[in-house]
Amino acid sequence: MWFEARSAPARGAATEALRMDVDGFLGPWRAGMELVEAHRAGAVADSRLALAARRMLTLRLRLEAADGPTADPAAHQMLALQAARESIVLLRNDGLLPLLTGVGLRMAVLGPHAEELAEQLRLRVEDVQHDTGADRVRLVAADTGHPLDVEFEMTEWRPGRYALRAGDLTLTAEQQPDGTLLAGDLASGAYLTVDESDRTTSTTADRALATPLRWEVLVDGAARAADLARNADVVVLAVGDDPRPDDTRQQVRRTLNLPARQERVVRRPGPLTRTASSWCSAHTPTPWGGRTTTCRQSCGPSPVD
Image (tube, rainbow, N blue to C red; front, side, top):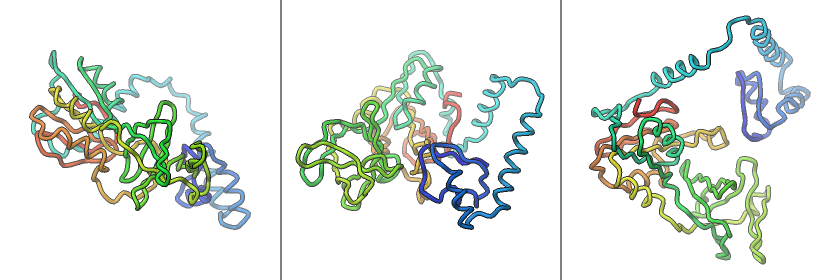
């Protein structure tokens, strides 16, 4: 088994992963050095390291010894599509799926996963519009009221956990008990600070020195998505978790409910009199009223298949 990290995890992660039967490590972190230190300290046994090495070398030798035909990419794609179709758990369908895709059909794809799903749907449907439902916000230092110069698109992936994007700049933020945000690159432990005198920003590794922020909504993303939905024949909701394996995925999930700002995107259009389908990503089924079809999946074919 392999463990891959997009960013360096907390110290001790490699040792703990080894105890959980992981043999190999990928990503921008020095897992090998950590295991060497753990072995010297007596936290990792010789037998466990030998087992990991033996299994990895055995796999490599088997792959090198394999003399089979060249892989067929088309066959692999068909097999992946079949696996995705068979992995979908359909919770309810009143005859809506698969969607009819006649000439002149107008489709709106809404939610934080809308862009990637809309690209797939445009292969089958001519008129597909999408909106992530993200609010455009301005961040303001909570203590001084000084605004940051950049406006962000704000997406709530987990309750109280946000992504803030402005062009190539991406921040993560978490909401504090008092309602303010701490922002920065939270996975690596870098927190944003705002200088009170000249309003310049920098980062600190000391969470206690981070500047609490509040946000002001400049454009209501849910209202913008609702406008798009009202002019569509079919509405597809692409909502759920962030599928990237960052530090938020290590948290234990205690509910299947959507975070509040994604829920607003779902609820804002009101009763949908047109055909509506919910296309939930990353294990988030949600009970909505109206004519809807709810499915639970992490990946798969588009709802027109």
